[in-house]
Amino acid sequence: MYRVARPVLKPLTSNLFGGFGGPLLTLNRSKRFYSSKFPSEIELDGQTFKTDEWTNVPPYILELTKRQLHQDVNHPIGILKELVETTFKDMGYTYYNDFKPLVTPFQNFDVLGFPQDHPGRSKSDTYYLNKDYLLRTHTSAHEHECFQECKTPGYFITADVYRRDEVDRTHYPAFHQLEGARLWSQEDEDWELQMLKDIAAIPQTDIIVEDPFRENKTFNSENPKQDYMTDRQCELASLHLKKTIEYLVNQVFENARISAKLAGSTEEYLNEPLKVRWVEAYFPWTSPSWEIEVWWKGEWLECCGCGVVQNQVLRNSNLGEHKFGWAFGIGLDRIAMLLFGIPDIRLFWSLDERFKNQFVQGRISTFAPYSKYPGIKRDVSFWLPPDSQLHVNDVMEIIRSKGGDLIENVTLIDEFLHPKTKKTSQCYRINYQSMDRNLTREEINKIQEGVEQELIENFNVKIR
Ligand code: DAH
Image (cartoon, rainbow, N blue to C red; front, side, top):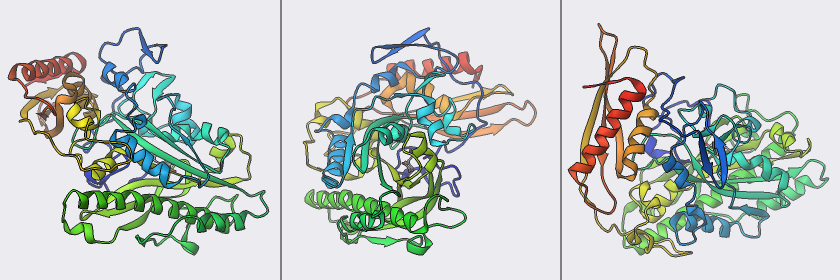
């Protein structure tokens, strides 16, 4: 998540945005990064890019950009995307689905007002082709062009996004987001009437909403209204935004409930009413800003970040100073995992027919696991040199580069500083498991050796 201040570090499993808790354990942010040997040029979509000291995107990530899972109407991600698009049909939105993942730092960060020192810009968090191009880390990277281009009051963008991250059941370096936005104009004499009409057009739901920030509490000094808007404009834009997201969440989670019941589940939570709550947040390109959390199977899930778009972003998009409105961003993969009962995020990328054949357009069905193949656990322990710049994400990337989708998860299980030598020791536990076959000891040994070799060559570690 691209919030700037994070008040409490919540367990990563309850974040549905798609991977932005940051590493559980952040070592000193490195200046020098893992950069295996890159060729002098790399290719993406028929374009050639000269590599430089920023290049850190490995070939297996570039391969993922070709998959476009959200465009596949028979894939869970594509089915979920269509469910949202159908929900908002005829409500004034244009749907954008084919933006390419290659963007500039300007699109991904600058135009949205990310501060220069925001960690999202760093090479430990983001995949760069070179200093001028990166793989978008969020769909907000296209707000600028959509605001410029869109002819309807609002739009939705769905796309694949990429982040260097930890490895586990719910984190994968590629995932999907859906972005929405809607604008009104202060120059429209009837703006208030229009907004009230637009709000009334959003279908009512039975969802239980906890929102201490409604009506006259929409904004405050910590989460301020922008000066160019009136109180009423800010209140109505926020209300439209929240009702839109509540309706979206309702449609998606009600479908999950129906599907689970159809699959024979009798779990208690299926009979409870759907409950959401709003919490304040901070994003560089919105003010005021919030997140919505959904109560699901006994825990609050962070589901979607949103807010009233900063005037600066709209001005940057040549929309003048009279437009105002909202934007939100939601991660699709973890919602699709809940919706389709998919236990491991890697399955979305599986080419196995036993996975793919289970899903059809327009239907939310519960995944039937075909087999659970046994896993293999291995540790990698090493001493770091005293001034090491190794970042947890660097280790994750090395392991993922060597082991690909055989890596089920990786955890830093032990770390200590030797009081005399000032050397740090780290131990990572790697769980290997394949989705579709048995593993052999030989192949795992080879991956382990490769990981150790890369760590030695790039970070001068001493294997223990
Ligand atoms: N792009 C944000 C992220 O990936 C999510 C988001 C938050 C999108 C607020 C928005 C927004 O449009 O207004 O963490």
